[in-house]
Image (cartoon, rainbow, N blue to C red; front, side, top):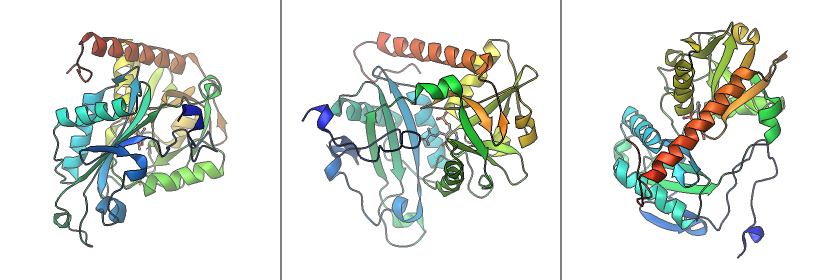
Length: 321
Ligand code: PDD
């Protein structure tokens, strides 16, 4: 079947459904690569029943999985924070990811790696689940619309507060996404692409799927990890790149007023990279040189990374570690 005849499902809304699935993909499920039509997990899986599990989203550029080691290290950190023992080691997971990419003949892709507690009887006790479920799927990467980068996107500050870090820590990249989904629903109602959540103390945290940054008086500001956010891999890179370029960085506690009065705002994540923001609630911003510059040097880093992975030679999953 030619690519054009593949019936893409769920693609009606380019703002909100950029990555689409189809029945002709190959999916990794517990050690086997199967057709999406045959890729099933149990209805008794605690990931489905209780949101008990973790995941990572990765991006593949020209056949190289970007920051693969970092994503897998974070996956293992999330696993250890919920007392989940992943039955594969980092090298096995790397191979499984590349095998999934090869099966789907993808070079520029979105990859989702999910590990749930697995199948078990009803009850919250993780010991009811003898074996975690591991699923990996990969889809062709769909770029965000160019206008988003050119003109910036619209954010809101949601009424939904970010999970309190001593309840469900945002450091765990967990399958429990209702907190983020509720915030996203608020954003969608207001025609915004992303919602920024405050923590229980009224301080800025992060977006539903992104970290936030703003420029104020020539300083790059971003909420600190203590505010209760995910330790974004893109965020970490942007901080390092900014410091390397001599830009002052302030990782701290900020209010929404701090962001309203900023000169520039942008968000980051693995798929968006650096996305400029033109509006937060009623406050407007220019798409300025600060975000553009960081996006450019981020993309240079991506290029250098791909070149490095390729230079490692024939082993497709060779990584610089
Ligand atoms: N989301 N904060 C949250 C709540 C996220 O879900 C993400 C990533 C980030 C950015 O992390 P990173 O730079 O490592 O991608 C911050 C991914 C893209 C997702 O959920 O698919």
